[in-house]
Length: 121
Image (cartoon, rainbow, N blue to C red; front, side, top):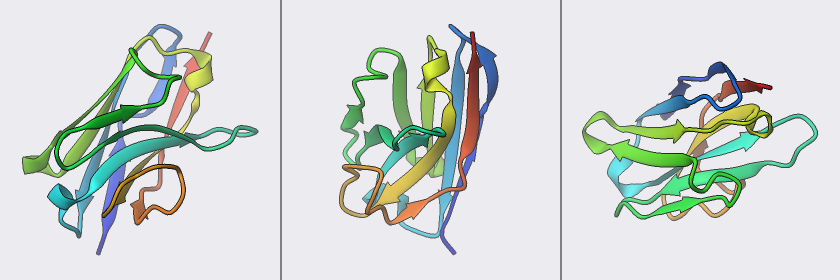
């Protein structure tokens, strides 16, 4: 059974930080691109960040310099460190996995249930 379980969401004030975690099971973690996308009411889905099996990373322009993605293969876990948060970051954040590459919010092999991040001003 494939599972992607997110944790670490919550409510913080603007300027604060959160670290999201995603623990994967049921597939070969080391062979997959992992990433995070977010959705908020009234907004289009946005691919936030990805990390490939070789460690290369991608960040959306909206989060560059503020967010950092990392992975711990021994724990089958991917993280998203989010700093300098603003209300525009409020969304449900989803962990995702793809056996080829993650290029958008769509066409993904697997995704989790999401974790809510709320940033107040």
